[in-house]
Structures are given as structure tokens and as C-alpha cells.
Image (cartoon, protein in one colour):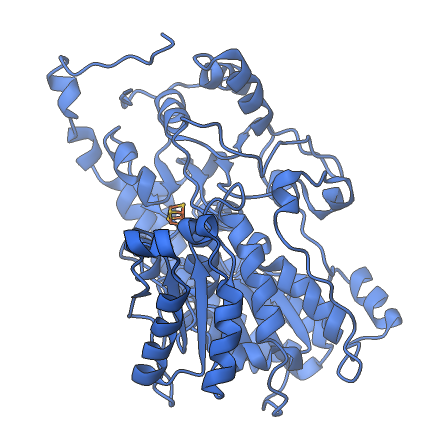
Length: 546
Ligand code: SF4
């Protein structure tokens, strides 16, 4: 275990840091990790290659979650009126009970199952004799008790191992119940290299079983879907407040504060605005292919990023009244943001941060840190693919490996009656020329300074080494990293579930975040912190290869 001291290295060479991170690994592991640690030399149109979306080396304490966590926890967890039933042992349901702090607003219908945890609680006899009957009984019990519009079934590792046919159970129960859409996700934890595989599986099934199921016309002007926003700590509420003020109609968020009917009517939107590229780009592509809805990348994390994204949406609709209203909203919201920055910046200017979170958050949150004058010295994702680092232009060159082949690619075609291109090819070209780029994401690397370290699938050992060498003023990651980093005397902010804070999106969220970062990085408490092994050095350990 290393401990950070408060003395900062004035300068460090990124190549030295990289060498130090992999120095103690066996040669084969070091070679593999070296490809996942990139010294950023991204230039315009040219980004060095990083290895991503590959299996974690056994024995390394990864920050990743499993495929089931990505499917159930990330994508389907935030929906409020779909009952999410976990078919598996109860331990997997750690991810089924609000661990991500998704918030929801029950709305006029009042249906809200988000604060329940549904599990078949598989026991030894179910593993031996099969759990299909128990699953069907659980679906029936849920229906009798709750009468939901929809029940989603999630497979965990043991279910895949014993071969329960969850899809047939789902279909039989759907036919039996009549007014409840039941479907299943083959999202066993072992299926992919990380939670990213679970996102893809969730996207496929939501598209196959729900999107486009409801043609009842939706009301409102300037209809969009917001994809990849999960309403952690109320982020989605703040974004919806801003949309409402601007006169933009959000048909469906995938999937923060979402409902079954929002997903079912999502094909009626005229634009998809994609926040988290990694987790939801599959739905964006499928909505375009089947219904003709284009997508653009947005980011509502950071006040300037929010303003930029609103302007992009307004530019897409080419409506002067909307463009003017968006400008008026930005003008009204920004003074409070600027006052907060002016108050805080003298304490945060020049401080440093590290971000290791998600498949987009390590990118999005750089905006907020930059707004208060802080530098990102190292960042990376837990479950990203190369396009999330280097930009989508690498997609045609990505190799399909055995792990990727494990995840179904569904065939989508233009809908015979409902496909309607929202813009003509001439309009699309004109918008591209005006800066509204479609199906476009530049990735993390071009936005980071030259010489910074970009690290894929950081692990606990490397995290501690990085903190020891580079001594950031704040480290951002998830719950598994929280306490090990804090024990090194460095403040740690969870950016998956926000600890107990939020919202951090939009204008009001930015102000909340500035205050939180000011509080964490200005606190003197870290200088008083003495870990037990600093005072009682008898607690020592060595790695087996030392
Ligand atoms: S890895 Fe498998 S057993 Fe573990 S939580 Fe995920 S689904 Fe459950």
C-alpha cells in the first residue's frame, strides 16, 4: 500500500509515470497494460491508438462491473414503471436496488417500482433442477401484486450456466397475461469484457420489444429524445427544466426518469440528442435506420457545454423563434453561473484532477473542472471502446473479436410505413457545414492536453501509484475506489452515483458541482489524515512476484 504525501512533484514526465505504473507487472501483463496506457499526443485528425474493450487480466482488481450490471443497473434501472426482475441469486441484486441513485418522478399515473428490488432469489435446488418454473411464478406474482405495463427479466451468471430459457418463459407469460409486455435480457455477467456488453444487450431488447409500440401522437414542438442520460442525483430533472424553458419537447430520455410509454413513442421524435455515447449509441443508430431520426452528440455537463448543446439542438430545427428563446434562456441562466465561478475560481485555479469513470463521464466532467480553472492530468474509462477515446472515425477499422461476437447485432431495416427522413440530404449537408455534425463524436483524447495520461481500465494498484506519483488535488471514480483513495489523503468524488450530491448537469447543476469541488479541494482535513500504517508501520505487505 502506498501513501501520498502532500509534497507535490513540480514536474513529471508522462513516459516515466507510465514506466513506473507497469514496472512491477510480469512481462506479459506489462506488455498488455502498456497498450492501454496512452501518453496523449492527439492532434487535429490524428489520435494515437489505445487498446480498449479487452478482458481484464485475471488477478487485477479492476474498476469494471459485469454485463448484467450494465444492462440492469445502467440502462433499465432508471425506468420507473417497468418491473425489473432479476433471475439469479440474491447477491447479484446489489445492482438492483438504487445503488446508482437514479431519481424519478412518479408522475400523474403514480406507477413507480424503482424503489423495489425484485429477484427470484435462486437457491441450490433451482441451480440443480432449473429455475424456469420459479421465474414464471415470480412473473405471475409481480403481475398479481402490481399490474405493471411491462416486466423485464434479467439473466445473471448462474442462469446462463444452467441454461434456463428465459426468453420462452417471457413469451409464454406475455401471452398468458395479455396486457403486460414481458421480455428478457440474456445479460449474464460473464458475457462481455465489462458492463459495456450489457448496455448493448439492453439497447437491442428495448428496441426490439418496446420502441415503436405506441403510435398515439405525442404533443409538443421541437421533439427530441435524450439518449444516455440516467438522472443520477436529479441530473435529468435539471435538463428537463431547461428544455421546458426553451420550448423543446423531450419525448423520451433513455433512460433517466423514463416510462414504458416514453420508450414506446420515441420513434415520434425528430432528433436524438446523445449524451453518453458508449452506453446508448446503438439505439441512436437503430432509430435512424428504422425511422429516419438523425442523431447528434450533446453534453449537458458543464454550463458552457449546456449552452453549446442547446444551440446545436436549436440550429438543427432551423426555427428562429427557438434559436432566440434558447439564447434568452442562456442569457438568463449564465449570470448566476458566472457569479459562482468568480467566487470559487481563486481557490480552484491551477489545481489538478484525475477522472476514471464510465464510458463518457471522464470526458464530460472535464468541462466542469475547466470552468473553475482546474487541469485534468490523467483520465480514462472503465468500459469504453476505442471510438470513445479516439473518435468514431476508427469504427470501420475496429477488429471484431470473440468477446464482441458474443453480443448479438440485430438487423434493423427501414420501417415500411413509419420511416420518414427528418431532413433532406441538402439540409443535412447545410447543417453539417454550419457545424451541426451528425453521427459524430471526437472522443476523449482530442479534448485532453498533450502529455496527459489516458488510461483504459485502470486498476486499484495503478490508481494508488498514480496518486502517489502525480498527487492530484482530487480523484474522481466510483464506490469501489472511494475509500482506498481517501486513505491516501486525497479527496475522492464519486461520479457514478455522486455520493449524496447532485444534480450536476445543466446550469444549476454546474453551480452545485463548483461548490462541491471547492469544498473538497479546499478542505484542510486531508492534511490531518494519517493512515494506520503511517503511524504503525508493522502493517506491511509484498506482492508475490517481488
Ligand atoms: S458477475 Fe455474475 S454473479 Fe456476479 S453480479 Fe454479475 S451476474 Fe451476478
